[in-house]
Length: 167
Image (tube, rainbow, N blue to C red; front, side, top):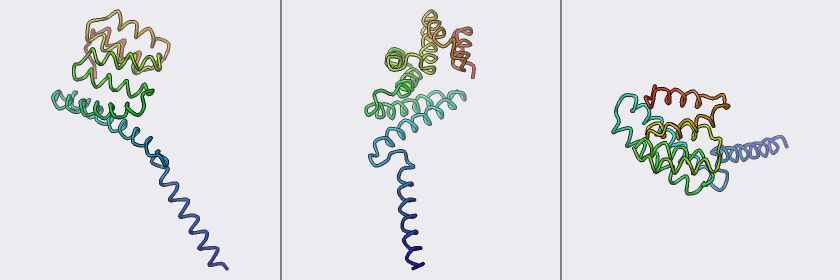
C-alpha cells in the first residue's frame, strides 16, 4: 500500500511541476502573451545594446540595432495596440534612426492611451529639443514636474543644455 501511495504522490507531483513549468513562460496555454512579451523584451534588449554602441560612437551599428528593434516592436504592436510601452519604444527607435515625424506620431499615440506616461513624455520632450521646439519640450517637462522621477531630471538637463545628451 505504501508503494502505491508513493507512486500516486510522485505522479501528482510531477504533473504539478510540469504544469507549473508550462505556466512559467508567462504564456499560459494560449501562447500569444509569451510571444508579445518576448518580442517586446527582445526589442528592449536590442535598444539597450544599441545605446551602448551609441556611447562608443558606433552610430551605424547602433542604427541597425534600432531598426531591428523597431521590427520586433511593430510585430508586438499588431497584437497589443493598447500598450503605451510598445509605442514609447517604437517612437524611441524611430527617433534614433532619424525619422522625427514618425517618432512623434508614435509618442502621441502612446499619450492617448496613457497621458502621464513618464517615458513617453521624456522622450517626446527630447525629440522636441532635437527639432528645436523648446516650447513643446517645456510642455512635456511641465507634465513630468510632479512625478519626482528621473525622466523629469533628464529632460530638464537636456533642455538646459539644448540637446546635448549627457550619458
